[in-house]
Image (cartoon, rainbow, N blue to C red; front, top):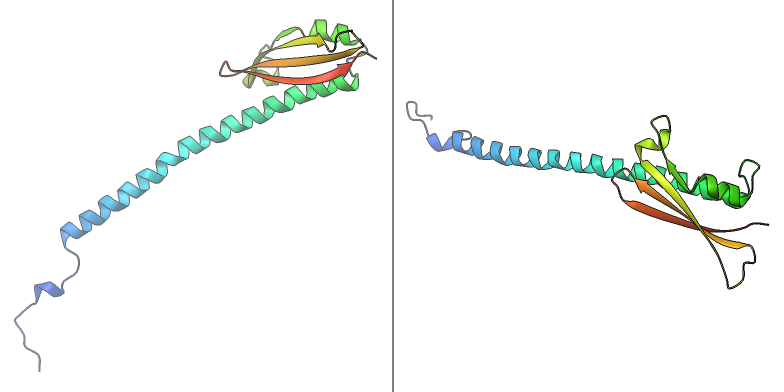
Length: 137
């Protein structure tokens, strides 16, 4: 048999305080997740730019090693690429400001082996160096 007229308040749903605590916890979690996205996007952008920088430097050094210096000699290529300031038309200007090439003969006597270093000034003013060895023969 049921009795009417009495209501047990303990059987009710959530209280307002419980709902507010749940909302605060949920909001804190969402804010923490959203704070990760800008950092991840910046990291991805930096990694992409570094990859393009390495690709550009390896392309230049591989051209030099293969002797693909537009029909010129090693010395002519070195003179033309001693210091390159990139202008706005170059697609590399987004991640490379300039590059400089240095060349040093290897060994006590010049036997035609050179160490060529390509220094790239990046978009954030850091400089990265890439080195290869070439011959003039």
